[in-house]
Image (tube, rainbow, N blue to C red; front, side, top):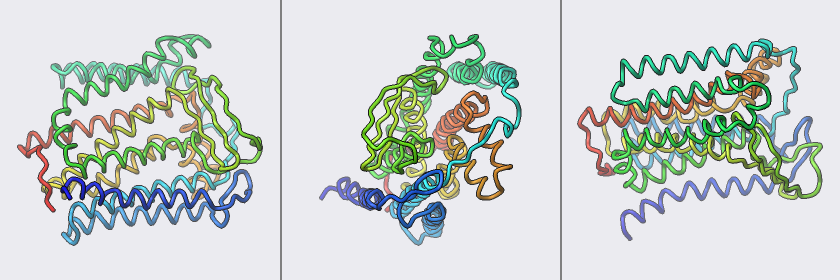
Length: 387
């Protein structure tokens, strides 16, 4: 058997185990719960336990690799399974927890502040992008354009007056242009290195697997994918397309509900753009971490442990307002959770948009920084597996 086929088969084993676990969870009978539903015998506590087990697996694989007790490839298997189990635990916790209900009185500041906050923060981001781009990267105007676009994400809802902003062409242009510009930046500054890195099948499939897990994680904790039946939903199959404001403007959303599975899924172009962009960026960052481990570079030995854990941590902070609010309810009570819920979840809040664009900038910047650091250190980009 060819080495590439053997490596691919080895990496598919944890994927198969994870898939069987997910299928098994969907076959457990459904039992009603207050404010939501839970699978028979499972509760939000089981989700927490599962997430802790995942973090332990992730950390343990990283430590064992750094102490040379396991090979880099085996460590990648462990990290991948740890990320998958952590994400699954977070999804179970979010799906099995009662949905908190908050009133406008619990908002940290009134919505009348939103226009001023949005325009001022967005303008500041654009101004800083112009100044920093001119002083730090005068030969890379693409960075300045990306910063200007990120500022428009925050300012846009209040640049166009009234309901016209819901369907204005500028809003659609901002959303569509973002992945195109991000892709151009990565292709220009990191494309050659990434192509070399992804020639290793283990590295390639590790990046693809982590990106796919994060995509499922995003859509699950934000309510666009659910395997938990909820009270008040119809008992017959529902397939409908409705217009919904999601990511700046109105998009058609395909909603499918199959009560016998149960399965709810909602799909929109904006969701595919945002989730696809974020999960791809995370997958590429994960592939670079895997590449460092595979070639046994000294930088990878110190960066790999923190980088692997940051994959889950950064995504949770950037895109999971409801999850953060529910954790706060469990830890500190509703009085502490309510402001967090409004800041993260309220679609009109400039802070919620700031976390999305912050995630884009964070993952794009870390990707380019890692590539350029490798090139400046004179490290080879070709893949020579250490094990």
